[in-house]
Image (cartoon, rainbow, N blue to C red; front, side, top):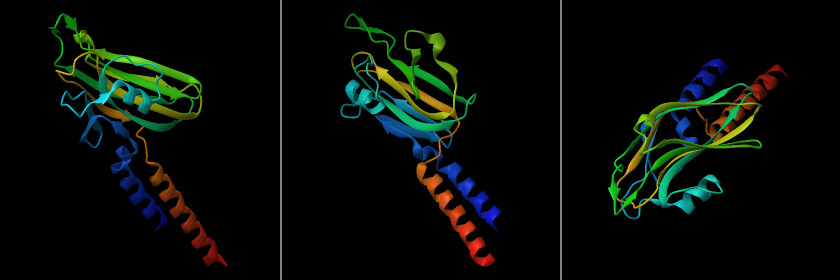
Length: 194
């Protein structure tokens, strides 16, 4: 019976795994395993650069406005954190004499290691669909942020779609719930043995 309950709990946790992601800006779930971020040129729906910087805890970030998601995963030494991504931008033309090179990025914090990497830029059409991978050099908690930014005027949108996020983050509440049920099951067995 206990194995059956644990199996049901684990299956249920898969469906709520994306609940541990926090977002700022225009975010939507595309499916159970993918989501999309948009710079969103609609007035009042985009977030200023300073809001995205504060949300992710990044000291410097180029751009005017955008959106991001962040999450946490526990990694063992040698374990990979990875995802597939597709970047698209409507903003690849000159306007008012300026080229606004919107971009997508990933930010990783792992112990004392900080990694900030540009995934794609609107001016580079060869970099609009790829796989990102990072290897843990020790055991610990990885805090990751993935985002997309306008580099100039908020006239055209750029978007970033993330899929196959691995490992899938589990909500803290799910871990507490599972731990509590296991403790209760152990307590019941111990009590019935008396």
